[in-house]
Image (cartoon, rainbow, N blue to C red; front, side, top):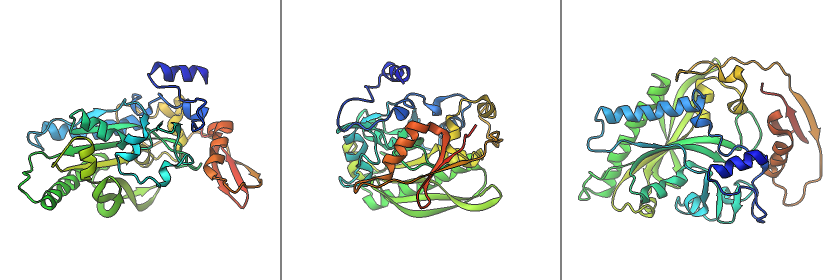
Length: 347
């Protein structure tokens, strides 16, 4: 841990584990900061990130949006951010569950490990950047199973349309921007998944209105099903104003890199993304999407545990203890009707 902690300091991050009463960053989480899987050559997450960035570069090269600057990619921003940027500026209600220490890793009451890459929207807008992509690791206290991990990776994009005349009614500008958003993202998804059936679903996000989710019909392990690919919408005016952008309409989208990579590469367990085993890493190269070939032969081992629950017990606190003690050896923790720990090595 000390070597990894020193690495974090060398990368410019503040001390992640302190004596502050509000600090709940564990050693297992601190050890992940700075690893940046999405920046590692030939890693599945990097392959997906690069495909998305290349799609927008191609749009710019083809003049799809006239007189717009290229969408700049930011994929090495510090994950240590302020509560103001992560929650307040993004219109997350004060009583929202995501703000609780049971769900978020705090360094102190005003600083945390980002829970989403959207926390960088306002700071980038304040720097005068209006068209950009952001990719990075995000941190959330979560359950333990094959599709959840306390550190995962998101990517998002934001674009404004200053050329839309303010003489045009606001609702009409919103409709124009939304149609541009939908056609742009349909093209992006097709560039990744190929020709697939798509559908738009109305959704709710605090930072966009109207909000939508894009789903695709895709075959996963022999079964066709509708899969949520991303969330998006027209950026809330108040968020734009927080960033110093007044009377302009823009769109934003966000997606989970692991969610896409697990489907595209047929990776069954989210823990595998953290593997340093050559049997895993050697399967991916040259930006090509290939099917993962499993290699672990270890069967699962179950351990059942019972204990008295305190009135203020939160299951995420238990999951944090399990991760600190057993690391990634635990595949799943479930209620059965005691707590069942499923040990299974992923490599």
